[in-house]
Image (cartoon, rainbow, N blue to C red):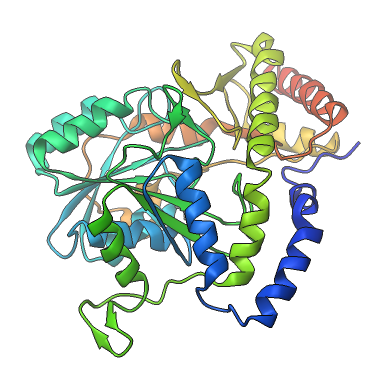
Length: 375
Ligand SMILES: Cc1ncc(COP(=O)(O)O)c(C=O)c1O
């Protein structure tokens, strides 16, 4: 049996026919940039994610960048962000001419609030990018928000990976100053091309974000800001609207499969350590995350490959290990992020995984890990 790390055809199959029909209408109405289908998607997102305003844009990277810009981040700003995240988080800060300051993660792989507090004394942050990483979020979300609010630090929450994540029973996006989404096709709600969204309860901020996404336009040919061309079109919006219609089912099944990996593979401790949502947080099953405590990941991946199982490594290196970030200021030695990246292995996890595939992954991982840990 072959189980790839990801199989997008299964989730795409949910909406394929519906999207083709919608695309016909979008093409007839020439809704190529913006338009009523984009408006309908934004309304559906706001409703689903517990926020007042959702503004679509071209990518999750743009969403972070434009969210930060709307909160006043620019040259001279100091912005804290976790060392463990996708490179786009760093790019968004750096592209604005701001200085990224790297902070280590906590045991739950989310930004370490205690380190952030200490680092703020030294660096005096203008903004923080909190990343809801791996398919869950920090159990200390409310404390992190309060920390930033009380000190007037702008807070953008990078929720690229977090559609479907809930904290204390509410969508993680609810109550954020600004949060963002990515619709990269491999995300839990994936588009048919790049896309993103910026979410907020603040009408003035939403208006500014909408302008910044559209060249900083005041009217069609007058400009109140230097913005970007970061807009969504009807084809992508129609695909995403269809996908949102299956959102609950996608999250429910991915979440259950992720939890079942942890349950079934708990017996592998201490050879492998499983990571998952902390108490009070419901994950979305974006990733199935393990670290290998004795075996080498290359050798385990090779054995799994022989058994027909694909694995991923999210992420094999931290931000501070990337050439453009080597000199970036940091709050500490960033050891936890680095140690995690050295050891991480992600098992296959995608919408539509069958029970047989799930069982085959569990069995193969156990076999490969035991063989390689005993060498
Ligand atoms: C944590 C995180 N931030 C930002 C992004 C960037 O999103 P996009 O690829 O849509 O630009 C991604 C995903 O790709 C991500 O996982």
